[in-house]
Length: 280
Picture (tube, rainbow, N blue to C red):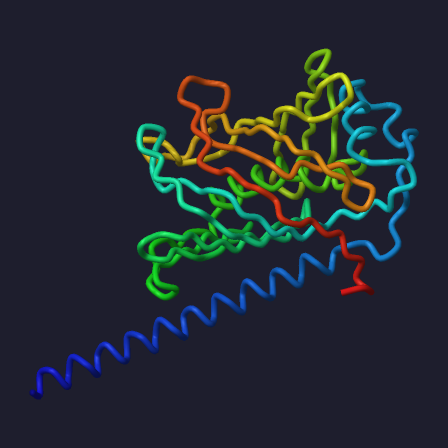
């Protein structure tokens, strides 16, 4: 009996410790989310095609498709999404239904909070500073970040996602360079501090984005070693959101453009908002 009591006490202590740990992480998620939301410009300039007139023609086509004239150039978006996320491989995808919320504030960062429907619930968050996921809401199964490799990998992700959902963040300005790669393809390079990422975008004759891809710093390989490797995705189901024309369907994965490409992320966007700070 004494052993049983001791075991119950130890289990109770462990559950309390995990709960405190989870609460601390939740507060960090919330603080970073609010910090990024606060970078939204209060009274931004409005879009005009002259803002991109000196860019390569495919980039001009993209911006003129993605942003209507006179649109306030908000740079921070909050998103709700469903879709599927893979826990497996190309040979055995093991897709699970996901629900997620995200704030995207390029070049400052992002926070993505996700929950998976599976036999054991998986939830957690990803950001420019950490990757944290748990089973049953408490037990850590992944806890990464706080190092240059993670920061570089995350930076590539949110620069690419700006082409999906916050195109105003990549208009000409400090730290942003555009170049032509072909008649329908342009490359943007965003630099901030010691981080720099080049991302390619291919557009159709109207300027609608078809593909986004780049060389991402990643350890998603058999050796689990960080190195540059292809990453990218496709976009569809474009809809108008506060003057922006944005994809509500995105599929993305590693080894984009090769025979090993596997779309582990399939997002169906439920909502996108560009709230100005005074309206939150």
